Amino acid sequence: MKSSAKKVELASVDDLFTTEQERQEADEERVVRIPLTQLHYFKGYPAMQTEVPFTGQPYRFKDDDPKMQETLDSVKKRGVRAPGLVRPDPDGGYEIISGHRRHRASELAGLEDMPVIIRDMTDEEAVIEMVDANIQREKVMPSEKAWAYRMKLEAIKHQGTRTSGHVDPKEAGKRSNEIVAERNKMAVKQVQRFIRLNELVPDLMKLVDDKKIGFTTAVELSYINQKNQNYIAVSIDSQQASPTQAQAKRMRELDEKKLLNSDVIDGIMMEDKKEVDKVILTGAELGKYFGAEATPREMKDQIIKLLDDWKGQQKEQVKPEKKADKEK
Image (cartoon, rainbow, N blue to C red; front, side):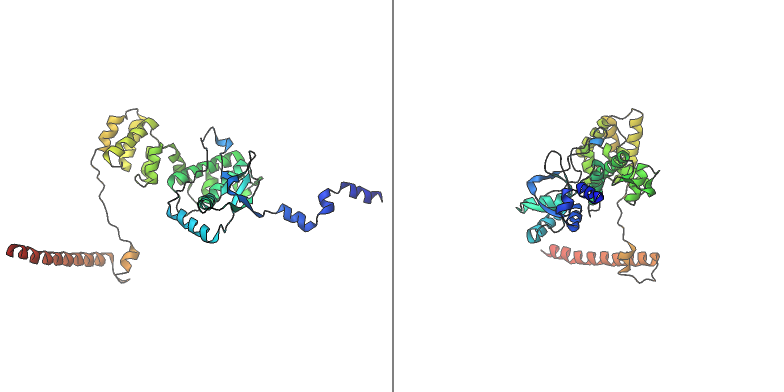
């Protein structure tokens, strides 16, 4: 009897007045609808503030972006089908970890709320989840990848390679950049190069996003001090020309020797580019017109012959026109 009484005393109110199924459901993540006004962007990552001055989520999108328009059309027709992921904000409301585009589309569509999954996460877990959820998008700008990989690297460093509070045995003993590379199926060196882009001044980073500066060239420029980077951005704008990789490397070397300034940058940028424009046809493209047995030499000869014939036809079309002009 004493034993039985003791059990009743230790039983909680929830145990006495809820079923086992209800208690299990309470522990499970469920989709709930939250007013849009209570959802806001990830404010930042406190552990990174001294190393990475981050004030919001790194993924950007514009209302007139084609992908944004696709999302908006879908939300208008069917609502938000896939729930976003959020975490409670101690200051009130919820921080969006994934679903930023869906949230914005809901605002533009005039909706009042959207479905989300609420999950308690540490800062490190939230950063890693946000990066993993967004880096898989079809089009991610270099600046977004640069921020994302750097955020993830710092999160893993601070987390001590823990995932959901537990050490992953496969990652134990590995360096943070190795873990980031493996999780994103990239070479360590490539991850390091993307992270290096964070050292670019905003004007140069925008040119990288706009594909006016090549990735490898941008990495070279990132090693130049920011004052000279700004001079380079001004020179690019005034001359309407971007530096080649070789020019970027020279400017980096001169910068390391403290010999780079605005005049030197203009001089290098004004040099004739020795790069030759090329037209490249892939094997798949050529395969549409040539048999599988055709050799590269045979394909080249046939292409040249066709171009010669086409050029001759162009001349024949021009001659009658000139003759008609003389008769007038």
